[in-house]
Image 1 (tube, rainbow over the protein chains, first blue to last red):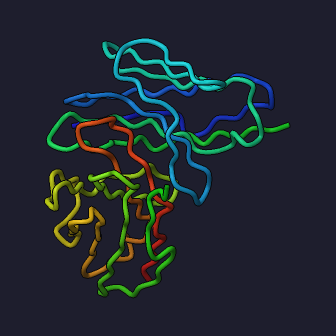
Image 2 (image 1 turned 180 degrees about the vertical axis):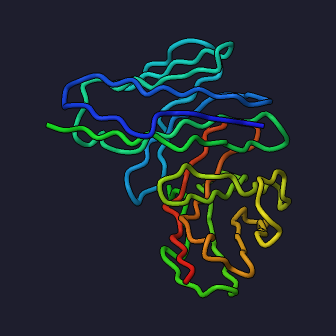
Length: 111
Length: 113
């Protein structure tokens, strides 16, 4: 089976750095995605990791350790608009390319 | 370049009824996946269509069925609606054999009363 865990809620202040963790157990792992979802909107792609290590993209970075079944999303220089749900999703390597999502982490950024 | 589009935006149905939701993939994409997102939860995979066939299916009953047309657009059908089917239904498109990034549409909010 598959299991993806991430914290339910996190809070931070503008300008700060926050790290959202994600642990997973799944068969047929073929990569991990992070999506951002504002309330009432569709998820938007943030990052994709398939190899171990850190991927940096502007204020956002994502890390993957396949041996530990662990990933994190790092958000720097937080802005109010970063208040959203952050979804960790594992890509299963079976026939097709289904994304298996965690429940999401709701991040609230205050001034 | 149009992204993923879905229709309708919102829908209210009664228990026992049937519903059809529609999705047009991003230009150039040939694979469509459907997800159900209950309030406060992450999206759950329903099924994926490629080359007009259901290629992979999640843990959803047979009441959930779909179709993909030659132009790659897709429909999701749900029969015998239950109150628990109330959710945001998301369509995502991707390019088979290429990058695995899935682009999501704005979703259809289904309310079953």
